[in-house]
Image (cartoon, rainbow, N blue to C red; front, side):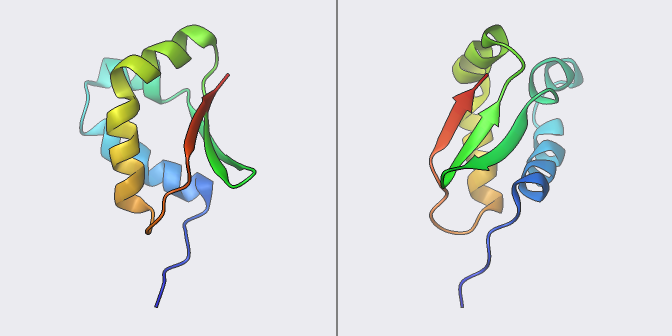
Amino acid sequence: MEKNPLPPALLWQKCLAHLQNEITPEEFNLWIRPLQLEFDNDQLCLFAPNRYVLEHINEKFLAIICQCLTEFYPENLPHLQLKV
């Protein structure tokens, strides 16, 4: 039996709790906490407050965020897109 996917808000809350233990509190509060996760046209969209944060997330934290999302989302995680 296939599990229903978590709503984006709950999925993101679970990821935030996990990521908080994976990176320093300073990095978490500066880079991760301002992000918001939403579904948009069958894609997961991670919204950053500005392009600078988006670029830093893409360079430094995207792999760990994707790993975390995959851990909490059932099979076939939708494509993740970064947006401002």
